[in-house]
Image (cartoon, rainbow, N blue to C red; front, side, top):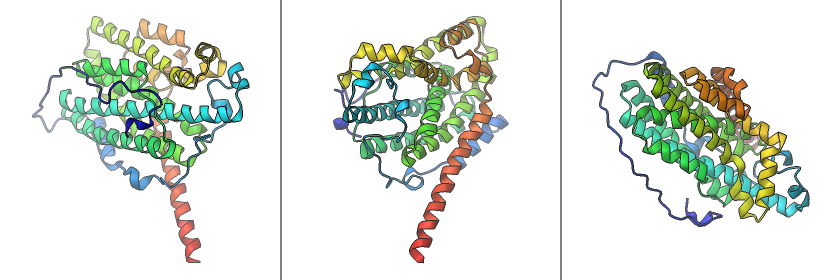
Length: 358
C-alpha cells in the first residue's frame, strides 16, 4: 500500500529498529509437547487464501464502512457530535474505520516481524514449527488489511505512537520470552478483543468477514503464547517475574490509550481536548476499553504473571473481573463464527448458480 492514501504526513516510509537477537538451533527433532504440536497441525490445516476466501466484490460505503449504528462512534452523544451535520458525521465514520483498520494493519506487520523472530530465537523445536505457520498467517493478515484500506476505504493512518512505542520495546528486546509476552499475549490479545467488538457490531459483510477470518488465526496465536510461557515462567526467579509484570503493566496502559483516536480528532479539526475528555469519561467508552482486556487478563493469570502489580493495574482499569474468562470457549466461538460466515457465503454462491441455471 502506498503512502499516498495516508491522511497525515509520514516521516519515513521505513521504520528501522536496531536490536540484537540470539539465534538458537535445536537438533532434538523428536522432542515436542503434544498440545503445541496439535496447534501446529491446526496451523497447517487452517491456512487460507484471502483472494479466494473473501468476496472482494462487496461494496463498502465510505459514509459508514462498517454499516454500524451511530452509537458505536466514540464521541456519540457528546456536544461535539450533536453540533456535527450529516456530512461531517459520515466523514468521521470513514476516518474512524480507516484509523482502526490501519492500526490493525500496522500491528499485523509487527506480529509478522515478531513471529519470524520467534522462529529464530525460541529454543524449542515445536515452538519453531508453530511460529513458522504464524509467519504465513501474519503475512496474509497484512495483505488483507492493506487491500481493504487501499481498495475499499482509499484512506489510511500512520501507526499510532502508543502502538509504535510498544512494538519498539518488543522488537528490540533480545529475550525470546519477551517477544512472546509482548506480541502473542499483549498486543495480539488486545487486538483479538478489538476484532471481536468490530465483528459483532459490523453489518457490512466484507468488514465482518475480514475481521472474523483474521480472528480465527489470532486465537491460535494467543493460545501459542499461553502454552509456551505457561511452561517457562515457573522457572523464573521472583525478580525476573516482577520485571515482566512491570512490562505488562506499562504495556497495558499504552494499549488502552492507543484507542483514544487522538489522530482522528486532530486531523478532522475537531476540538481535541473536548473529544478526549468525552472519550475518557463516557460510560460507553469506558466499558469499550475494559472489554479490550477480556483476552489479556485471563491469559496473564494462566501463565503465572498475576502478582500484585498486575492485579493493581487491572483493578485501576476496571478489568480485574475478566481474569476468570474461559479462553478456550472464546477460541471455539471465534472458529465457529468464521465457519458460519463461510457457510453463508457458500449458500449464497450456490443460490446464485441455481438461479442462473433455472
